[in-house]
Image 1 (tube, rainbow, N blue to C red):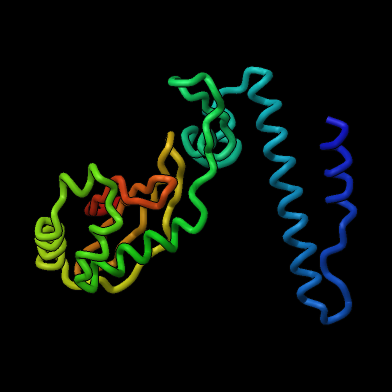
Image 2: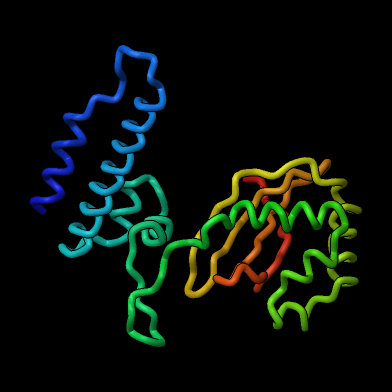
Length: 194
């Protein structure tokens, strides 16, 4: 708790904007403040959990669902081993998902299926993948753009949910990656408007 207090005091004392035009320095200071604030939130959430706060209470305080709060700050235990699970998403996975989607949109079926893990390769052929994408294009037109992906870690996998804007419809590309960057799951879901 003493280290947290020192970090918080440094955070409060830090100057971000300077009178000079050294914007790189100002941005660097702001990033340091953001990291310090994240550390404070993480420590307070851990303290709250240790003292009986539920994930619902924490999620409400953060303005997110209890699941989102848990995914960001929780420490899940692997039921297979009893060890803490890795909750850090695969680095660069948002860009990886975007490249898979771009390959789908440009008809590069082989490039997509080459990324499949053995289980996916056995269950989804190039022809079936092409037919599925053709069905989506037939219903909603060509891909016009990608939204900001949501990325999470579940067990041994990193899951990306990337919004797709088609000419006449909205979808989500859910792609599941193993740590070796192989695709372990691929679904295109129609997005429901509220």
